[in-house]
Structures are given as structure tokens and as C-alpha cells.
Image 1 (cartoon, rainbow, N blue to C red):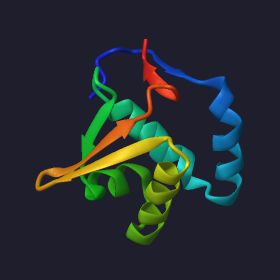
Image 2: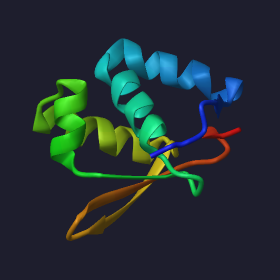
Image 3: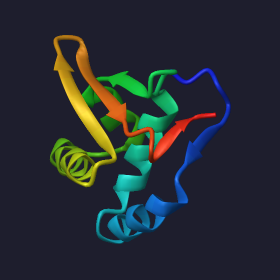
Image 4: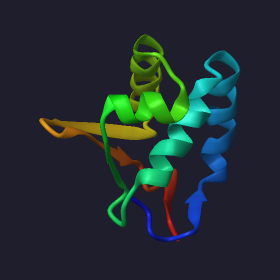
Length: 96
């Protein structure tokens, strides 16, 4: 989890995220949750269940949102037995 109180988000990508949120309203909630969970290496380690509970998102919706965030270059995913590791693109969001 992010121990720093400040996260920088790129203005250049905010417009794209905003447009995506018009079609997929929960995309902002999921992305903000992942940013809040990220460590100093820009990695958020959490299970789908944790994300679903924190964002009130169904599994099909979460799958779609995660795929969109990955396709748009906001995140990359590494799967493990303990849950997924979501690498947040540091050009989009990072600890300050």
C-alpha cells in the first residue's frame, strides 16, 4: 500500500481516463483504488475479491475494466497464486 500521501497523475492522460469513464463509470473507482494500493514501485498487490469489495464492482465488470486499463496502457498485470500484481504505468500515476 502507498505510504506516501501524494500521488501524481498525468494531465495528458486524464482526458482519456475521463472519456473512458463516460462509457465505463466504475473505471475511475477501480483505477483510483489501484493507485491507492500501489507501493513505491508502482505495484498494487490485491486480489479480484479485494477490488470488487472496495469498488462495489461485479466480476464481469471488473474483468472488462481491467482489460481496458491494460489495453490503454494504464496498467500491466502479473498473475500469482496470492493475487494479481498490478503495475501502474509511472508515466500516468506515481508516488510523489
